[in-house]
Length: 349
Image (cartoon, rainbow, N blue to C red; front, side, top):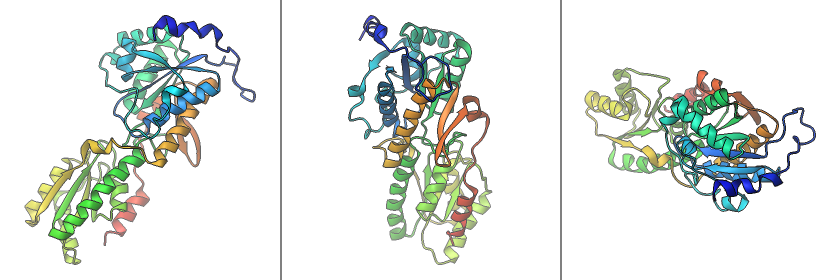
């Protein structure tokens, strides 16, 4: 569809104000855009679907931006309707594609992207991604006055302002499935297995996998241990009669899984194998929890724009929706659950 075609139906759009009951006097947007940015996460497609269908329900058109901010400053955009997002809720990845854009980090790149949005008659932008993506959205709003809403889509679950992020549940399940299989081999060969999971700056995945997988120890970016402690964990396990051990390491732990595996072998001489799960944790069909979360957040993002909100991230907390200023999502940190960390230590005896 050409840009001219995109504008052909704009005159027919309802310019009514927000639904009855809202206190906002901001005119209801007639057309919004949605993009996915940064690393892909299972459930992004469910969020895209929710944005398109919730917007359609409220009489708002949606423009899909392909390849994230890179596509935005290139003008790679098209109108999306309910049928365009049929049968994608169960698919991993993102049908809009994603990319990291160096150009968007410059004022010139953002100016170009803002020009494309305005040319398409877009009244607001929904960005599905992590903190880097939210930086780009925040500066777009600050510099060009285009309302933006962030939807937390990252498997690391490291964004302040929401209990969980889209893709996290699926990543944990994928990693746990691998750990369960590795434990069978570890027990059969009486080996030590060090398993590195994703989490560059946070240990949420590692901690959940460690507890659910019955690991003997978990190593998090939030808790650094000396090499002597790493080896002592294995010695203690052996002293308790354990012939094999599973050690879970977040990739952001200093030196990652390789450092832990080296420390174990160097100080114990035990047969130790390292498995780095890597990007398989990003792929696959999203589990039900991610589909439900993404659907709720996608709808909430549309309603937030309709209600005149901007420069915020929608999230879930304490059983309800939360709204966090975008800048707080990277300025404030989200710690791992210390109760769960204690639980992992307690249950490893």
